[in-house]
Every structure is written in C-alpha cells, then in structure tokens.
Length: 190
Image (cartoon, rainbow, N blue to C red; front, top):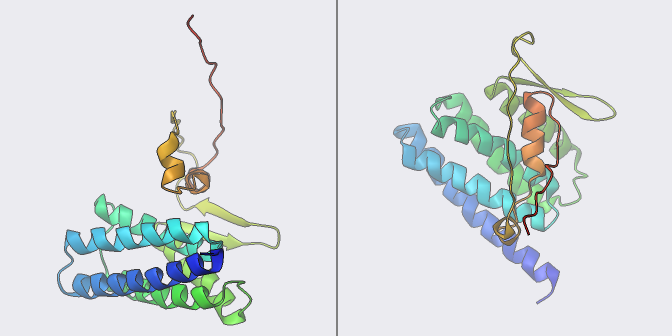
C-alpha cells in the first residue's frame, strides 16, 4: 500500500468522524449532555492527530483550536451555546472542503479559515490578529496580572506511537504569554 492509499483511507475515516461530529452537535442542540461534548472533543482530537500525519496542516490548525474549546466546556469553563454549535457546523463544512483542497489554494477556503480561527479565538476570550509576517495571538486579559508556572515535561515513546505533535502545546503556551524552555541538568548516579 502506498502513501496515497493511506491518505485516501484517512480521508474516508475523517468523513465518518465528521458525521459523528454532526450527530454529536445535533444531540447538543437538544440536550447539552456531557457525552456529546466528549464525543465532539474526541472527534476533533482524532482528526487532528491523523491530519498531521498526512500533511493537512490547516485541518490540524482548525481541529486543534476547536478541540480546545470543547476541552474548556468539559472543564466547565465555557458553556454550550447555539453560536458555538453553529460555528462547529461551519467548521465541519470547512474541514470537508480542506480535505479536497489539500494544497490550500482555494480563496474561499483561505478566507473562511481566517474567519473561523477568529471566531474560535473569540470563544476562548482571545483576539486573533493576522499580519503579513506571522499570526500573533494576544490575550484579552489584564496585562498587569502575571503568574509563573513551572511545567515539567518528560516525553516518552507513547507520544511517538500515538503521533502526538507537541508543537501545539507550545502554541497554546504562547497564547497565554511568554515562555522559555530549559533543559535540566541530568544527574547520573553510578
């Protein structure tokens, strides 16, 4: 089996997952139940991981951001609204379009991608600014408040097996403010 066959299999599986997401959203419109929220999160997480393996970076970007919104809902930091459900349906249509527009050259997809990202960031209370050189994320919070967090990260082989791309962790950290990476001194006991 060549890479194109694997890619086509991913596209078929992504379509099935998007149908599951559609169904979860229809359920959320009626009940706002945690099972449907978890399903929406799971679908975005699964599509994100597989998209990265096949070079669908714009799908990774959208699913990562939408996944983070549903994670906030799971943590009771955000609630389900009709606007979020509508945005999610729009994201599903956009992901379907990106599965066809793999090279991301369609002008409608390019414009819709930016609008979707802006809308998703708004749900998270973050403003999205697009400049010529790069995208910048600026928090809409009091800049005088500062907190310092020390995060210890010990990756293992499971990250590679599950095709987890940790670059998105750093993008999320950047959205929160400055960060720096330090490598601890290893102590070897003989």
